[in-house]
Length: 369
Image (cartoon, rainbow, N blue to C red; front, side):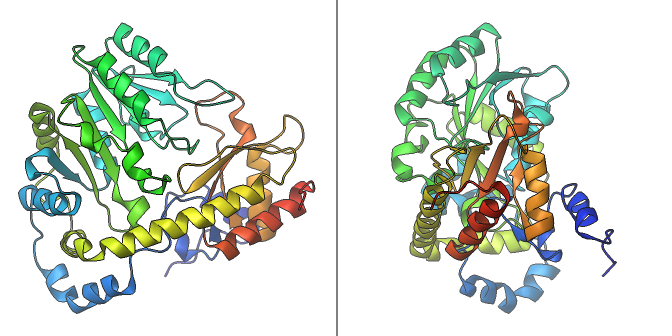
């Protein structure tokens, strides 16, 4: 293995902060990336090992079979599904090739805007300090701008705040008849206290202009196996996206995982429940920092605001890494006012979360236990 391009913790931080993955190779605690640490179970890896020759040596299946496999998992007809090499592939197709004018509340997952051609994406600011989506204002802006794609990420990234289902239904009704596809990104929905009460999956027949996007990397803990999917009853939109994916966009390991996942439904639910338990304790511990604004999380990560004075978010992130070998995400560069005052902390195991809180206490110095 080549020697990493750093000689001390400061250089290591500079190197890591410029990467988009491969963190496991560099020996630090990753509270930045957002995934389920309790799934998949070991039996899944045994299955990969037992079939590794076939998985490596043979062509995987194409879109029709993949859609059937996801359909079995989520109990939906295959024709409503397009499977992507992660949700990022589907986002790139919609933002970069299909949409003429896309609108998204910000701060949010940057790829929706990044993948759009210059001038094709409109950012709708979420109002501080609540960061709740005002669906009436969002609908009005969407219609006024003649956007053909509107995106809502729920729970949102980085705020970890979910949009109430009743608000999403009202938004769908307001956008009906305006030739606008409403993409609802539910990549973190499994970490809400009751996913069925937040998901719009059961409304796609009633509202054909709704499309659900879902990255499986987060909830299923499979970041290295790139799988995402979209679900819609709008066949014209589904076919347009389908035309954008190449014939073998999913590898053999991803295909095998989709084949066996239905056997692990119970394990999956248990794993998400454990994630929620750990997250809730971390949230409670973080609220003990008297000067830290901690937003109640609906996903597996927690959004916090640092005080207006003192250390900013990039400085805190760097010090936490250099002094404690712990990496969190600062929000400088996100589209929000005073972005350098915000941090996003991924929940890990209870012990790792406790170590993080202790490390923060040693740096910030105002934790009240």
